Image (cartoon, rainbow, N blue to C red; front, side):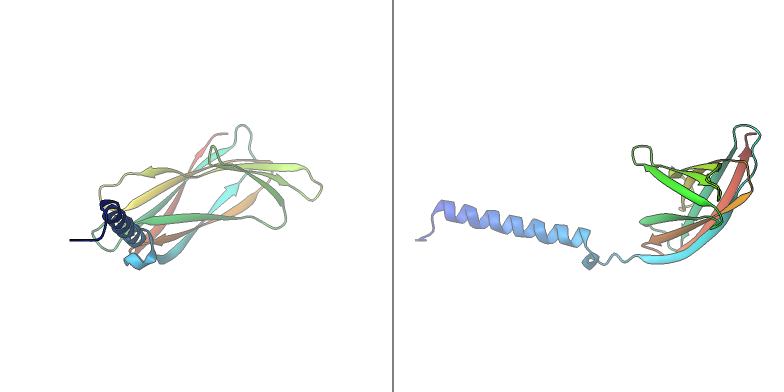
Length: 171
């Protein structure tokens, strides 16, 4: 006959179940699970700010990753926008809209351009197993300037990383 009470056994079972779930969750959420991220070669493109006669210009930046292996991959893209040092850029971010905006000032503090960026606005579906994201840039300016757009990517697979910039002039 056991000296353990029914409550003691229930506590031990509850402890074992809790320990099991902690181990399982650690395996699914940690690097110990075997999931390793790889740094994929970054891609770079340029977007021009041009003197606008009306509403400005719209630029669509499509970032695409084609994994080397025929299996799902986890992808984490990151966009870095580099701007000419001859101008002063004042950036603000609206987390609710995922909108980054800039006011561009010359050396006399005159507003010479504005830029709105919706980062990775839309994930495009593909039929070939690749992953694709689109970002939208809206530019308006009274000067010429060039922004460098660099997209880095970490993924659980190796593969080919590309970028494409398309414009639809608005005026």
